[in-house]
Length: 61
Image (cartoon, rainbow, N blue to C red; front, top):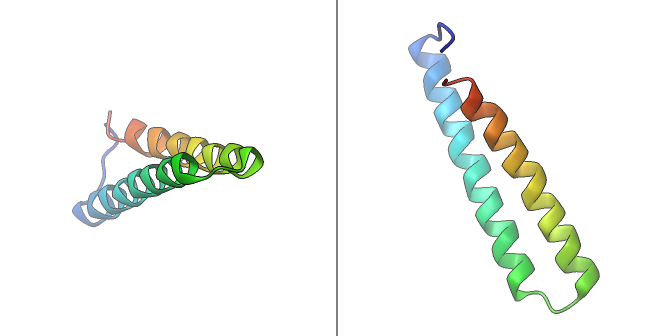
């Protein structure tokens, strides 16, 4: 793990939580959507935020 200050670690944890929330929200919206195009777009957004989440988590390893 990189040498992070407590402030940086807190900010990183907060951002990871936000990205996780966005993934869940976009996935839920995709499940509720009946329009195939919108469903794909919501899933694409979820995928982008999942990638952000994974990138941020990699800073903790």
